[in-house]
Length: 157
Image (cartoon, rainbow, N blue to C red; front, side):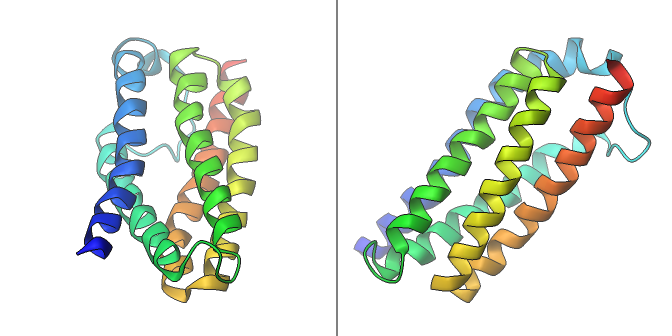
């Protein structure tokens, strides 16, 4: 039963970050974001919420897979520390881009976020192949988000 509680907590953490980020994002999506010039590869706005929900669920399960291996076993503590750092950076991006309405500052931050996500993914693979695999779509989406952020910054500076 303790393992199930860990799973719930592991999944709840990124979902909470996503919820808070969504609260920061929502007002700007309605007022500021529609007025920005965006690259032609920008997905429709309705796509972001379901994609992020799936990604948050996957990263929560991935962190649980690492957590259940034991924090001290095989670099688990380091991997989970990087995970928490990248999760904080994930939430911070919404504050910078949408809350402060600063695509340039958000671009600098998302490059750091991408490096943290890739590092986390590699560390997770070293502990659990399944955990690493669950992080790959998130790493890919973050790379895409970096390109999208760069495009928005370039078009609106």
